[in-house]
Length: 165
Image (cartoon, rainbow, N blue to C red; front, top):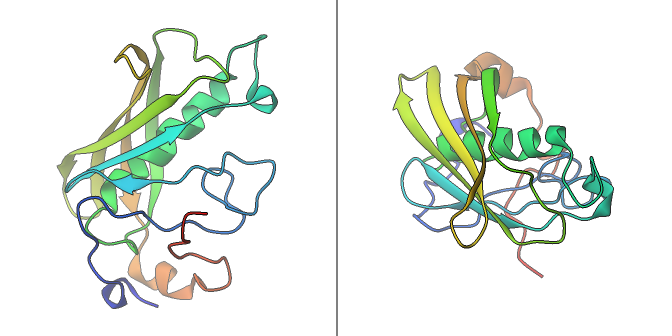
């Protein structure tokens, strides 16, 4: 499948997942298994609650898990118009504002700040439902070159929209 074979998703559609990705893999029992949604053009959203397996200090998420969630949500913002627009993270900065609690609903949001074609500038946030900012990030993403993308077997990794259970 190429970038042009994928339909353009709607504003609030569930985004694809793969089977084994650490962030979104629906079969990866060691992963986060986050389900991502479009939240308008150039915006993404996810709701998540972390468990003890994501712990750094007792009751608090590991900083690497927080960074992973931010990396994922920012990449997802860039694919809202085309689910086959896959990007690499070239540079990312994370600001940890408050500890990210375990066993608590979290809201992840991502948005595109500038889209220059092959290079996309994004922003991500982790918040509590009351709006408290826990962590934020910026990233520079680079679109995977067409020739590399065409070599990827998205069917083999299970890249598709899986129905919610």
